[in-house]
Length: 59
Image 1 (cartoon, rainbow, N blue to C red):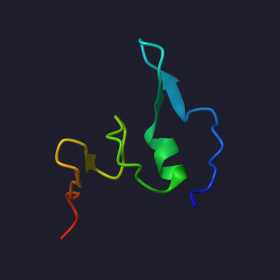
Image 2 (cartoon, rainbow, N blue to C red):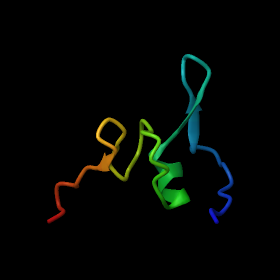
Image 3 (cartoon, rainbow, N blue to C red):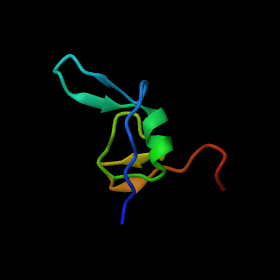
Image 4 (cartoon, helix red, strand yellow):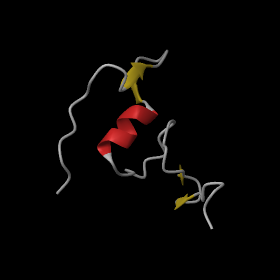
């Protein structure tokens, strides 16, 4: 079961279209990747390939 993560200042901004766009700060606080292809995903998920990109420091 996924835990509830309260939204605080700096967790999102409104796009020009009026949508909430979650920031890297929120994603890291939440603690997992939702695999939705989020604009600020710190986990490196690529929705086109349905995979996580390896970070530069990963082996």
